[in-house]
Length: 398
Image 1 (tube, one colour):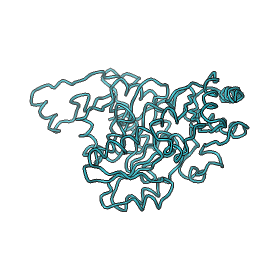
Image 2 (cartoon, helix red, strand yellow; image 1 turned 90 degrees about the vertical axis):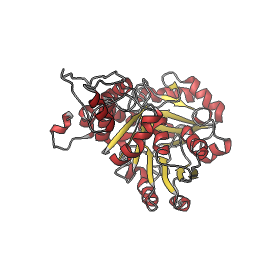
Image 3 (cartoon, one colour; image 1 turned 30 degrees about the horizontal axis):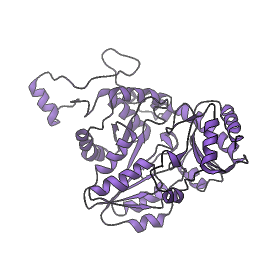
Image 4 (cartoon, one colour; image 1 turned 180 degrees about the horizontal axis):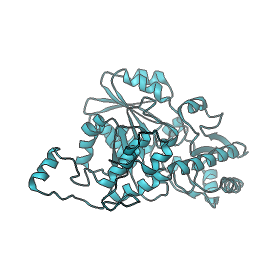
């Protein structure tokens, strides 16, 4: 029994982030224990057999599960409202497992074309090698999803908001469409964070995260997690994860547990800064386009109001002068750091067309709205006025 099992009262996400999933050993430790162990001891040979047969609850091997990892999984389940979860070594391990575990040769997958570059690699290169057909669609067009459906469609995949242009897709609408042929909808919710969007409540079947981003929040460890029904996690995903080795390490799980305690507070501060910065950039003469779901000029602002509880922590903006100007702005920044990560306590900027989406063709990037002048900003925990001043002085260099 975890400590929140003792209360029947409905608790806010902020409280669950601090207490949910906590197991205490016989020592009664306050902070969650780090069980840094690969294996587990059985009292008898018969006990080992029973554990492997599933007749006795408990842990077998850290690749299969670990007490610290399970605490992280249970805290994420409580936050997301999911029946079960499986933690992974990285966000891309989560994407790979969530897709591969439920398809075979001859099956069909539909995905929105506005995706992170590594996700596109899995969809366009890896899945087809194993005989799985993939159709990429314009995610904002419901008719495109309908037209792509086949009897053999098993999975639909999208991220909303998308990386890096913050395009939104109507999750409830797509869920209804793909469910009409019995397919599952898998959502990468990392940009929205679990604080600002609830995919399972909107009709998604599976939600996944790169815990490396906002959940850790301080740039320390890699991690990921897949959440869904108990049937999906235990009967489809778990076997794939156990035997392909993409499990989260106990140490990283412990770091993620501690990160979750402050997730709500960090996301609030970061989203406040993002809204402030988006308004500042929109008024700047050197900025030609600002993409932030919380602003009324975002193409899917009304959807953002229905689907998200905040505009989020990310801002994308385009500057005149293309790549040369974008490089000059990045190089002139003093507080904001150049890196391809996001969700960190430190503000981070990147040039997607030469980093996160560089493997795409120029035509693909143009189709996705990723111009040479586009920059992606992840707002951190610095004072928003300091971030605004840093951007102002950098933009004055072009």
